[in-house]
Length: 66
Ligand SMILES: [Zn+2]
Image (cartoon, rainbow, N blue to C red; front, side, top):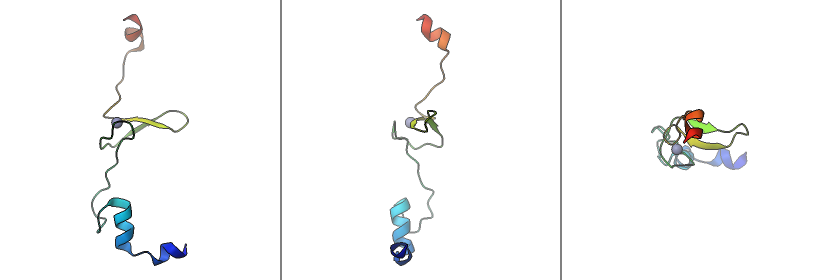
């Protein structure tokens, strides 16, 4: 806790957002495709495997017929 108390807000912002003022909205990048995204998709164990940019909904029966 001591180190955190000594840390200047600008340093904290730089570490967290890459911006000294911290005012810019933090960009969240998908761990799978690397694109900026708003929604993560995770399995039931909480592991993120996709975002709204790199996942799609497919009809299971249709795919099995191919
Ligand atoms: Zn993605």
